[in-house]
Image (tube, rainbow, N blue to C red; front, side):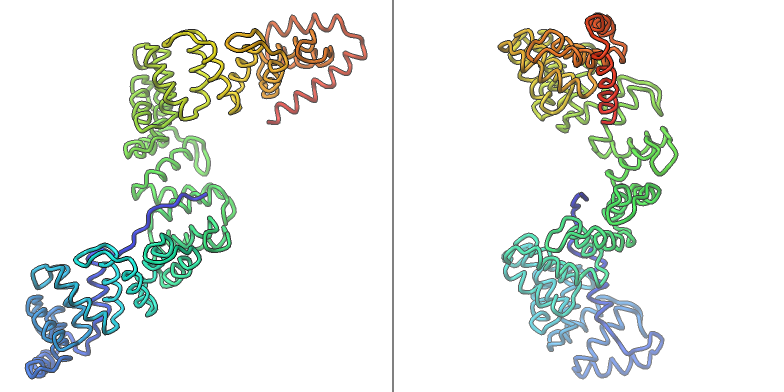
Length: 516
């Protein structure tokens, strides 16, 4: 599924100024007509509110006179004090931003309130915002919702989006995903980029609307085409996974790159993966390193690990175990289980750091406690051998079991051995057979030969020379010397019909195991 990314919920200062001044101010005056300025000044001086407002516009925009925001503010104020709603809104913006007047948020709120009471949607939206954030006014989510609703019902796009957010969060109103979707859609249909993205996510997850990947894709695409970086990343993901669109790795690369160039760490990581694997773009280890590094330097733990792996193996960069460890450590210190396991391995084997079993144990344990199967297995070995920690067979079994239950065949095999010889746990031949079989069915050569021996002897399972041969043959096919000798010994005790049946079963088992 697409990860939910944070959305912006308010326009920036410049955008807001343009919204409240440029968009709402419609003046009949020509920019070059100074005679109109003179006539407007005459009417404004007589106290005509509309003329005072128009004169403010002329000073603000330099129409028939040089731009003078201070003079503009003076005339807007005169009109506002006479109840001119648009002038009141403009004065609020000027006080909020400190344009032509000293910045004064409290005065801004006063003018927004006056304009809002007269039904100006932009002012209603701003009043909702001030109540929501507790700026000057005491925080009151219910009042915020009320003002957002008044503006939203007048098609104010930012208010529609903000009202959707309030419904989605249950702030000031009962939480309702369906109502959130309604308001996000209204904003989205007006081109609100965050509304489009949020609505796309809701369709992707089936939150408040019927799940529909195709509709999700269409809305997210609209946001992506407005250069929204999170939407561009999501587009890459949807093309990558074939969600709502036919899978297309080349298109995935296009969108991942757009987001990556805007600095999105997730996109940088995915683009690196595409270069590393050759999906949608020719394999290029150097490009993979470049993009992994960009993401890693932003703290992306997965990128840090993969960059470490490339340094460890000398792919796309000179082999450098010390540099590999440096990146593993960065991921580990973020609490990443795989990074911890990789750092533990480096200490256990002295790769890039001096060998230190105690440090290896510390990092393996941290990773294992987060559920990393390979770390759990490695921790089991350390308890079994007493390296870095006091030897403890029962603890070894406990960690092997955790890894085995996650499907790690090496752990399944070791657990079977402990049941077979009764070390760290009471001997149990049936359990030994169960775990040997589980590992053997995953292609584990040692488990296969030992399972064959259990069938040959009838230990923990009914004696069956045919299955003894089958499992031993599968192990022998992997080059296991013990299995090769064991196979010959078993074959000497088989009839021709048993051998024929065993050979047929071996082929069947081989195909099944290798199809996994």
